[in-house]
Amino acid sequence: MSDQTWQTIAIVAYLVAMLCIGYAAFRSTDDLDDYMLGGRRLSPGVAALSAGASDMSGWLLMGLPGAIYLSGLIEAWIAIGLTIGAWLNWTFVAPRLRAYTEVAANSITVPSFFSNRLHDAQHLLRIAAGVIVLVFFTFYVSSGMVAGGTFFESSFGFEYTTGLYIVAGVTLAYTLFGGFLGATWTDVAQGLLMLAALIAVPVVSIVEMGGWGAVVDGIKAADAGAGTDHLSFLVGASATGVISAVAWGLGYFGQPHIIVRFMAIRSPKDTKAGRRIGIGWMILTATGAVLTGLIGFAYINVNGLTLDNPETIFLYLSQVLFHPVVAGLVLAAVLAAIMSTISSQLVVSSSALVEDLVKMTGRTMSNRAEVMLGRTGVLLVAVVAGIIALDRTATILDLVGFAWAGFGAAFGPIVLLSLYWRRLTRWGALSGMVVGATVAFVWGQTDSLADTLYEIVPGFVAGLVVAVVVSLLTPRPGGAVLEEFERARRLAAGEEADAVPA
Image 1 (cartoon, one colour):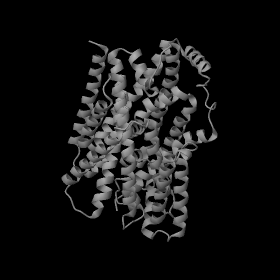
Image 2 (cartoon, helix red, strand yellow):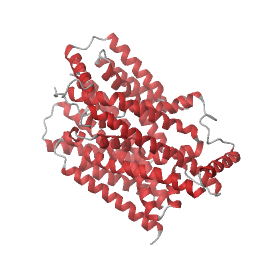
Image 3 (cartoon, one colour):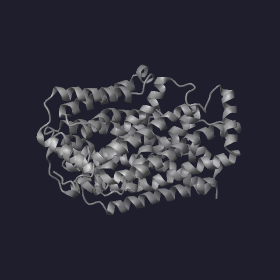
Image 4 (cartoon, helix red, strand yellow):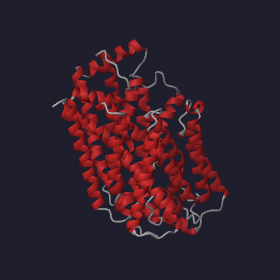
C-alpha cells in the first residue's frame, strides 16, 4: 500500500474512535445539566486534559510552530505568557469559580453565573454575555475549521473545502449528540495524542539531524543567509511586541470553554491536582511546539527545501520522518487539536443560546426539549462558522487572536472581580463587559492600533477600570449577594463541606 493509504487508514480509525466516544457520551446524557456541564463530576485529570486540549487547538500544532519557523524565539513569548496565565487561572480562578457557581443558584454557564452572582433580575448581564459568547465563538470555531481545511489540503491533497467539511462534519456529529461529556471525553484522548506527537516529532527530528548541536548549527547557518536570529528571544522584538505576546496570558481568565471545566470538576479541592496535571501537560506540549518550529527551520534550510506554508511544518516533518502508519497517527494529533477546541466551543455557544438567551424568557420545557434545543444551537453556530471559514484571507493565528482577545477583555476582568471583590455591582459588571469587548473589537479591527499593541491589553484594562468605577458610583450589593460571596469563599477555602444550590 502507498504511504497515503496507510495515513488515511490511521486518520479514519481516529475519526471512528471519536464518533464512538461521542456515542458513549450520548448514552450518558439525560438532561441539560449533563449536556452542558457533565453533571459536575469530572475528575482532576479529565478536567485538566480537557481544558488543555480545548484550549490549544490547531494553534499549538500549526500556528505556533509556523510562527517560530518564520520569526524564531521572539514568538515564544506567546507560549510563555499563556503558561503563566494558565497557572494563575488554575490557582486563583478554578477553586473559587467551582464553589461560587454552585452557591450562585447552581449556575452552569458563565453568563448565568454573572447574572446569578449579582442577582440581576432584568437578565441584562445574561443577555450581553450570551451575545458576546455567540459573536466571538463564531470566529473561534471558524479558525478551527480553517485549520481543518488546511490540514487535509496539505496532508492529503484534498480541496480546502473538502477538508473543512470533513472536520466540521465529524466534530459536529459527536458534539451534537454527546454534548459536554462527548467534548470532554474526546478531549482527554485528543490531549494524550497531542502530547505524544509533540514529544515524538522534535525528538525524532533531532536524532535525524545528528543531535541538538547539528540542529543549532543548521539554524545559525540559515540565519546567516537570511539575516535573522531564530535563537534570540529579543533580537527583532520591541517592548510593545513582547508585552503583546505575554499579554495572551490575560485571556485565560475570560475563556468560557476553558473555565467551564473548572465549573464541572468534582469539587474545589480537586483543582489543585488539576493544576499540576494541566500545567505539566502545557509545558511539555508548548516546548514541543516551539522545538518543532526551530528544528523545522533548520531541516528545511539544511536540505535546500522550500515550504509554501510555514503553518504546515509539523505536518511536513511527521510525514517525512515517520513510517506512514505512525505519521498517520501523528497527523491525527493535529486533527485532535483542531476538533477538541471546536467541540468545546460549540457546546459553550449552544449553552449561551439555550440557557442564557432562550430559557431566561421563562419558557418551560421538558428535559428532552431542552437537550434538542441545545443541539439546534450547536448546529446553527457550526453553520455560520463554516460560512466564515470559506474565506481564507485570515490566518489561523489571526482568527484565534481576535476571539481570544474579545473574551479576555470582556469576561476576564468581570470573572476576577466577581470572585474577589464584594463591591462589584451589576451595572459595573455590565459596563465593564461591554466596554472591554467593544475596545478589543474596535482596536483589533483598526490596523494602525492592532499593529502597535495586542487588543487584549487596552480591552482588559478598559473593562477593569470601567467595572470598578461604575461599581463605586452605584449602590452597594444587597445582603443576599454578600452572604453568597462569603459562602463561596469559605467553600473554596475548604471551610465549608458542601454547597447547597440556592
